[in-house]
Length: 57
Image (cartoon, rainbow, N blue to C red; front, side):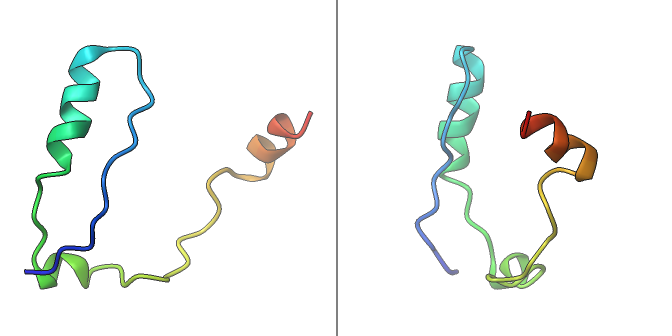
Protein backbone atom coordinates (compact mmCIF):
# COMPACT_ATOMS: atom_id res chain seq x y z
CA UNK A 1 0.00 0.00 0.00
CA UNK A 2 1.34 3.44 -0.97
CA UNK A 3 0.34 6.54 1.01
CA UNK A 4 1.10 9.83 -0.69
CA UNK A 5 -0.35 12.23 1.86
CA UNK A 6 -3.04 13.80 -0.30
CA UNK A 7 -6.02 15.29 1.49
CA UNK A 8 -9.16 16.84 0.06
CA UNK A 9 -9.57 20.62 0.14
CA UNK A 10 -13.20 21.30 0.96
CA UNK A 11 -14.73 24.29 -0.74
CA UNK A 12 -18.32 23.99 0.27
CA UNK A 13 -20.94 25.50 2.51
CA UNK A 14 -22.77 22.24 3.25
CA UNK A 15 -21.70 20.23 6.28
CA UNK A 16 -22.40 16.87 4.63
CA UNK A 17 -19.96 17.65 1.82
CA UNK A 18 -17.24 18.71 4.27
CA UNK A 19 -17.80 15.41 6.10
CA UNK A 20 -17.53 13.47 2.82
CA UNK A 21 -14.34 15.32 1.88
CA UNK A 22 -12.84 14.66 5.31
CA UNK A 23 -13.73 10.95 5.08
CA UNK A 24 -12.03 10.79 1.66
CA UNK A 25 -8.67 11.34 3.39
CA UNK A 26 -9.01 7.86 4.90
CA UNK A 27 -9.34 6.09 1.53
CA UNK A 28 -6.37 3.82 0.88
CA UNK A 29 -5.45 3.18 -2.75
CA UNK A 30 -3.56 0.11 -3.86
CA UNK A 31 -0.55 0.16 -6.18
CA UNK A 32 -2.89 -0.97 -8.98
CA UNK A 33 -5.26 1.95 -8.23
CA UNK A 34 -2.39 4.42 -8.34
CA UNK A 35 -0.96 3.03 -11.58
CA UNK A 36 -4.12 3.78 -13.59
CA UNK A 37 -2.95 7.35 -14.22
CA UNK A 38 0.69 7.76 -13.20
CA UNK A 39 1.75 10.93 -11.37
CA UNK A 40 2.83 13.67 -13.75
CA UNK A 41 0.51 12.52 -16.53
CA UNK A 42 -1.03 15.43 -18.42
CA UNK A 43 -4.79 14.92 -18.42
CA UNK A 44 -5.79 17.97 -20.46
CA UNK A 45 -7.15 21.41 -19.75
CA UNK A 46 -9.63 21.98 -16.97
CA UNK A 47 -11.92 24.03 -19.24
CA UNK A 48 -12.51 24.00 -22.98
CA UNK A 49 -11.73 27.05 -25.13
CA UNK A 50 -15.20 28.59 -24.68
CA UNK A 51 -15.00 28.13 -20.92
CA UNK A 52 -11.60 29.81 -20.77
CA UNK A 53 -12.88 32.74 -22.85
CA UNK A 54 -15.71 33.22 -20.37
CA UNK A 55 -13.35 33.07 -17.38
CA UNK A 56 -10.92 35.55 -18.94
CA UNK A 57 -13.59 38.27 -19.33
